[in-house]
Amino acid sequence: MSNHLFDAVSSAAPDLDAPFLETLDGRRWSYGDLFDGSARLAATLAALGVVPGDRVAVQVEKSPEALLLYVACLRAGAVFLPLNVAYTPTELDYFVGDAEPRLLVASPAAAAALRPVAHRHGARLETLDAKGGGSLMALVAEHGVPSFDNIDRGPDDLAAILYTSGTTGRSKGAMLTHDNLLSNALTLKDFWRFTPADRLIHALPIFHTHGLFVATNTILASGASMLFLPRFDAGEVLSLMDRATAMMGVPTFYVRLAQHPGLTPEATAGMRLFVSGSAPLLAETHRAFEEKSGHKILERYGMTETNMITSNPYDGDRVAGAVGLPLPGITVRVTDPETKAIVGAGEVGMIEVRGPNVFKGYWRMPEKTQAEFREDGFFVTGDLGKIDARGYVTIVGRDKDLVISGGYNVYPKEVEAEIDELEGVVESAVIGVAHADFGEAVTAVVVKAEGASVSERGVLAALDGRLARFKQPKRVLFVDELPRNTMGKVQKAALRQRYADLYQPAKVG
Image (cartoon, rainbow, N blue to C red):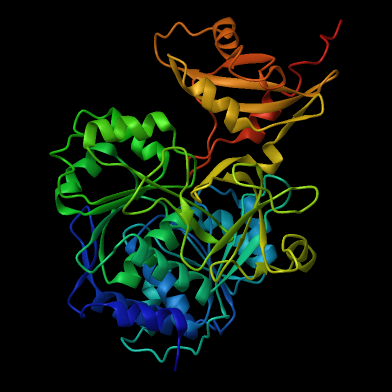
């Protein structure tokens, strides 16, 4: 039978003995092991009553077996639903209730807390630990067989559901098809020049688009291999670079590497590619990494709903602060949020995208799905950005992060870029905070370098004349670090909540 995504993976494997994955403790999997192990897991899923279209929810620590479970779901026709390991049982209750999975796979330590959740929503609970143990693998030993008749799955059949963060309401399940995932993996393989000779340092989580689909699917589509780390550690990553050719990471990875004394041109001599995404990469980090390593980081842009949309070129200008050009087969445009008309080069507006990578819609939310798509098929990303005359895309912020102060639109990234250039500033986040006179007041939250003598007055003085008056912050606040999610994105909603009363009149008791 034809199984759209798995057939492509299996045909890309150089041979069954070719390396696929290696862990820090020396465990190794060949492509033959991947196919054998995923067949056994797929047979086990079928024995547990999982039928095509059923969801399999997975909240486990990172392990090779968790990747094999993802591949097994593809082969069994199930819909893979990875969940952030930081989610609490209360949060899991929503996801399990919404997705109604046939099976919930959890870490053994969480099993007791999640058993009532699974029971309440009619899901079977099994466990899988970071070393490949747990009740699921015990069932594999009982039911698994080394061959499996793959379930017929076409390009438009669902392969996965990934829930968005839900910062503007309850989380939405993005439905990703076999071709959404495969088309993007094949595009990235070609665009980033991956071959079976490549070995990727994989230090990302695998409950997220970046680590699961961008990294893993691109490796599978190219028949390459991975050094599979449980988490990021700068020293460990540097020690592996003489055995690797590429790395994908979030900006925090590159900040830590640039601060490490071991980052040198000699240490990175065998590496050909460093990719960054999931959050904006500061121009300062871009420069510092290149100065110490001799390599220019390649920044790209994507979303849960679309996988990758743009990328700086493999050959050509990798522009710091820009996320590159639309990937082959993908169309990007920028429109006026009010009129929906396409704006000119260099003008800021709403980023919209169309292509085979764009998701099928939101799980059980037809009205929300319809609202996020234009009549001509373009998906409204919610990101504000611009496209320059050369076609390079720059993101200036999320639509919800736009600050409207005194009737004027203020794009946070424009202000942040000016603040981040100041001596002694590590990074900044600009938010809008309720203000009686202005509606919202532009407010800067700044992290300064250790020992730096940066002050609120100094920042405001430096910005005077560099930004229009309406863009200049009313206040500059200093913090030790900015709040971030697991992928390194600054959580501006948390900052807005923290400083919600900043401009309110002091209460007289």
